[in-house]
Length: 516
Image (cartoon, rainbow, N blue to C red; front, side, top):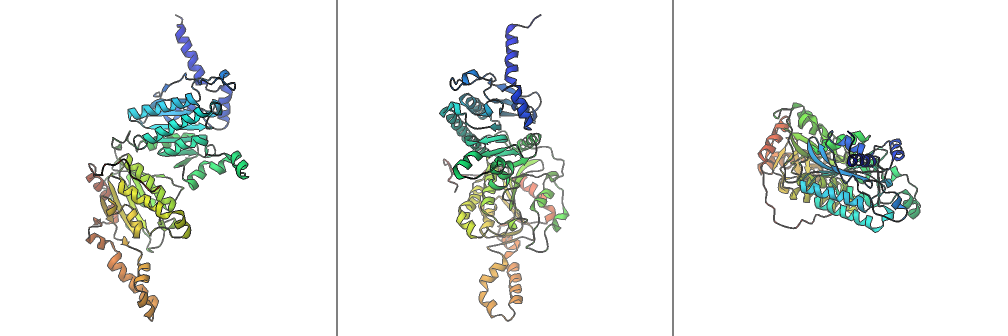
């Protein structure tokens, strides 16, 4: 029995849509080392779960010869599917169609899936490979971008939004990813810039290559735009799947637990030896984190940017947690402008999506210097204070070594409303380090002393014993417990378990005014 005409037509339309910009352009995409829009979705989503929407949409432009070229889908593939068995909405820009440029129909397709994601309370993942606004459509393409930006903003903190940059992202196209929660890029093929190399050369006379101007490694280490950089597209899709496993579907749900393999009561005596004997010597805070969390698995965010602070995702007894920690290997773990921004935004993201925050503190203070002061360290540093004070998720803080001055306040301290505060016996909590405090408090005594160095050493030891050790803070209830480093893991797990049903009052308001 022959197939009905309607079925033949449907199959023909499907085949035409699948080809996007045509076989030649698909081959060109592959020669660049890039997958097509649909190939990418097949790699990202669980097998056979993708349901495409608006497959046969076309543009309506009748000028500039556009009426002769109306590819089905209009340069973006949209729909929904599953990742790890959970619903996710997606759009994938198709560079084979008009270079992935955005026009009116393209924009309406994207905003439709964004609206559906909000209604369904499910994450949205955008795969970006676009030259920017479609010039032939003029102002309507800019209007379409604004519609997307508005939805990014309304969805922020409601559903997880992840942007994957898989080719160019130029002009207005960069702002939608920048408004989302996480941005991932691929080395060698991804780039993001508001004005490309040609415009930079024409306007400023500067000659710069696309990767040098806005490549993945630049945005990961210099600008802080990219949260993750990987070597291949397959790796980036695996990373997205890993990230989504830490997030709830939306802000009304708890973060998803997985069955743990690591014993919650596991102790680690090696933590007693992890700190150097020299109080000023460096060590890797990430190693402390890995010894504490489930299976030593720590997914660091923004690893190459502002490395004096480390942030990322881990699990404790199967529950997702957001980690914030000073990193003594870089700038002694001091807080500077970039690290303050990095930590503040990560804390706010965790708070938005019900992910508890565990803070590891070893901070000598804020980074001093003319550049920092003139660059606004006061303004930027206050973002951390705002983020921690604003957050209502469970917050547990552990001080491993130094906790000095205002930087201590900013790192999830008791009176920045961390729920439970712990310290190792090696912790020093004070307005400033003993060396600086002695120089200020005992200036005259040191000047009169016949052996200044010996007297200074004695006074430093005395100050450390009387004021800087954790037992002073514990005696005032500022530290809830001084613990053996070996029991850090079970202590943190018990603390978070006790806070699982935490509720916290905040006054009704439209929103706060974070010092941006």
